[in-house]
Image (cartoon, rainbow, N blue to C red; front, side, top):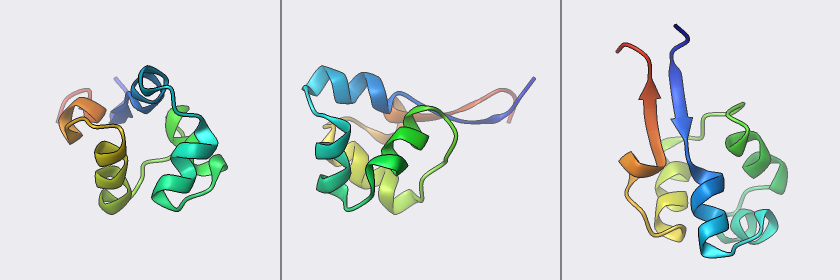
Length: 70
């Protein structure tokens, strides 16, 4: 089984009605970074993850989790 950090950034972003551009600007990253995170291609730093959780108004463990055996 593949292990790795998974996220629900896209779901929380859409629930809040925020565009990728708006989310990127609010945490000082590029839209491409948001796209990569949402497509599970990039694991953000802990600082970026905390910023995302704050903007999306959710806890880190709801936004990010480890898939597979740890």
